[in-house]
Structure formats: C-alpha cells, structure tokens
Image (cartoon, rainbow, N blue to C red; front, side, top):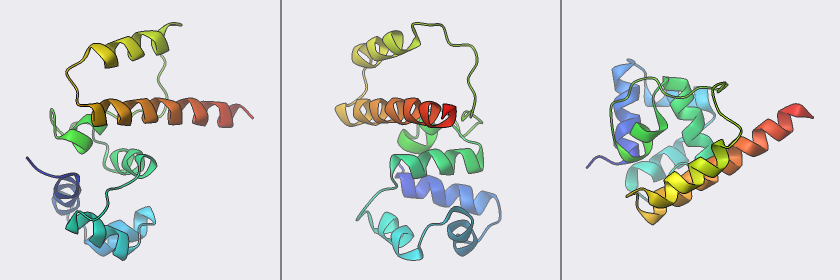
Amino acid sequence: MQSIYQRIEHLIESRGMTKKAFCENLGISTGNFGDWKRGKTTPSTNKLIEIAGYFEVSLDWLIVGRGSPSPGVMEVRENYGANHKQETAEQIQASNLTDDEKDFIREYLEFTEYRKHRDRE
C-alpha cells in the first residue's frame, strides 16, 4: 500500500509541480517534507485537510488510499441533519476502521467543530 507521502508525491507530479513549489504554496518546510518521505513524521491533521483541499481530493484517499483521488473536501457542508454528530460517532464505532483511523476521524470532527465555532466569533 502506498504511504501518505507517496500519495502526496503522486498529486504533486500529476499537477506538474515541483516539490519545492508545493512546499512554498502550502507553507511546508522542505525539512518537514523530507521527514514525511523518510517516514520519520506524517503531516498533521490540519495539514492533511489543507493538502486535500489544495488538490481537491478526498481525505479518505489521501489518508488511507481508499477510493479514488476524486474531489471530496468541501469547506461548507449543508445537508447535515441535527443528529449528524451522533450518527457519525456511531458509524465510526461500528465501522471496520483501525483504531488509528477512528482516532483520526474523531480528531477531524473536533477540528471541524472548532473551526465552525471560531468562524462564528
């Protein structure tokens, strides 16, 4: 299976970009990018969201390689019902995701709630 770094590298190459331009556009140090390549570290949740938005790919594909790199990141989601948090939490628990994947999703949900709260202020 490809790593997150390999999927990011694929996106960079498929857009005809240089790695340096990618790093400059997203405010990533070349040292951090090199650490991702060597598997020493991985991008933070916030950075993964930013990368997925930048390339207009789904977070699911970027993080775990599932599905295709088709557009999937939306800044505004309008069709959630009032119980979306409860349903999402139950779906996460019932899914066949690994514990790390579940933790990542929980962190993403917390970040989204934080961002919505911050934007209201």
